[in-house]
Image 1 (cartoon, helix red, strand yellow):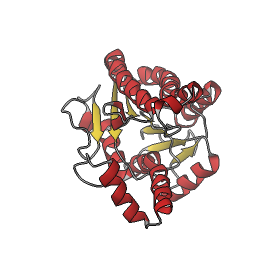
Image 2 (cartoon, helix red, strand yellow; image 1 turned 90 degrees about the vertical axis):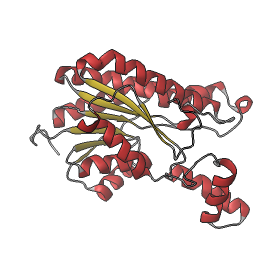
Image 3 (tube, one colour; image 1 turned 180 degrees about the vertical axis):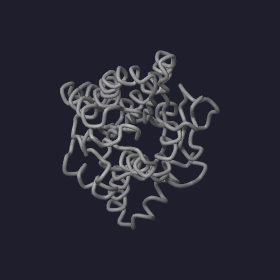
Image 4 (cartoon, rainbow, N blue to C red; image 1 turned 60 degrees about the horizontal axis):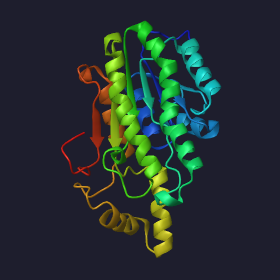
Length: 268
């Protein structure tokens, strides 16, 4: 892919694009005619994802959102190659140790915030000037139901997602006059490779099949999901795509829950 391609076609930059929600999001934008920049830390996994979703219009740029130099290189490469950034999807994230508050070290808090919050800060700061020059842009931050309905464990992760939802609202107010819309999506129990791994561990521990382990986990740990199932990454990607589209031209500062009715309140 090179900068000689038509600059009329919009560009979507998706972080954490090698698997799960990020990969499904990249594929969705690609199917809608976007040129896609796919990034994550692992080049091999990125290239595999690119080959699976369609290599011709996907620019692979490995980068670590916790590294200032990587972030600057990612954005400059995108602008040099494709000329613009119309959509930024901040999807890269980490959970960290699934443990009680008193068992999670301060170092783990720093690591989780560095990816989930400061990673978004770094990349958004690098992209916003280009969107302001264009007088347009859409930013979608991938938060979580845990940002508004936290679990009693993984306090470090829950706190990052609450911060991200808050930052989304702030940025929507800061850059609305520049034609930049900023929204968040908050998934719940999405069947990503990470959740699949967790459920497989449960299945192995209990000596049962994967589907039985998933059903028992939903009943025991996620009984508040009204639709009584996990979501697919493509279902989250569809909402991300909507928020970036002209159909959502009057939507900014919102947090769209893609949670199967999991959150009990009527507040976002």
